Image (cartoon, rainbow, N blue to C red; front, side, top):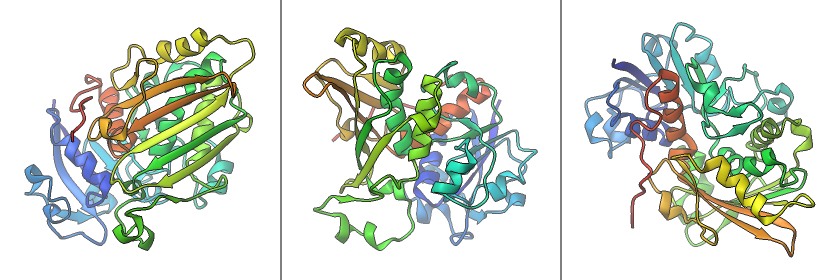
Amino acid sequence: MTYTVAVSGASGYAGGEILRLLAAHPDIEIRTVTAHSNAGQPLIEHQPHLRSLAHLTLQPTTPEVLAGHDIVFLALPHGQSGQYTDALGDTPLVIDAGADHRLTSQQAWDAFYGGHFHEPWAYGVPELLTAAGKQREQLRGASRIAAPGCNASTVSLSLTPGVAAGVIDPSDIVTMLAVGPSGAGKSLKPHLLGSELLGTANPYAVGGTHRHIPEIRQALAAASGATPDSIRISFTPVLVPMARGILATSTAPIVEGVTDAQIRDAWEQAYGDETFVQLLPQGSFPRTADVLGANTALMGLAIDRAANRVTVVTAVDNLVKGTAGAAIQSMNLALGLPEGRALTVNGVAP
């Protein structure tokens, strides 16, 4: 069976990456691409690397244009998806790459986003541990999927094995992320200009203000069966001069009495059978270069007994495993297709 697809926000980074991956999917026909200010222009003018889609023209983003497809991807700024999802009730599968349907708590939404709160959808991180098992079981046959925030899923995947196994204390988590500016979208912003980014590293959303914090707390709470209020995390992202990528270094205290073997076993049990989340051998740590273009999260684990903390270093491509790849992996599960179809573990080098 071939499924027809519409992709909104197709002139942006996330929309372009969704299209790049879908273009290689044997079960997908990309029928419609939409934009706002760029509507009416050829897609190829905004995504010149998508040569196989040069025949497509960006149409206006309206419910009428998006309707009538088997699958709709919404790659829109936060707070803009809800107005369309409400009008797509007859669409069999809708996948939102924005934040509008990620959070289960209206209080958290009001505190970090504001505006109208929309119902939470199935969270699109298949490998994520929950108290009921892996999140992929919630994605099988789903009709509405919320793709993750790239920073949030990276940190959540890093720490849920330890939280679920009870070997780390989630009340004192510290994480620092080196991130590429593509995660901030394609809209012109002075602080994201090359002249502002090259040769420097810039912290942002410091002091507990980043919008992905409640998403991380929600995921870690689901893994432990606790409440999000019991999860305390210091989260500091830093923009670095690479177009793509996240390198997240996360630490948490070791629970008293837990052995080194029990700690490593928690992560090995969680990801030993996974294709797209891989724990590296002891003493090895990933680079962002190793996951460029891949739907892979590579993870290194260290046990620091002097500080009595576990350190997890995880690398992802924020536009693939962090966004578009997670969305398509979740789509495959929802449709009953092989989970890895049109996705690769192989990065691009150099």
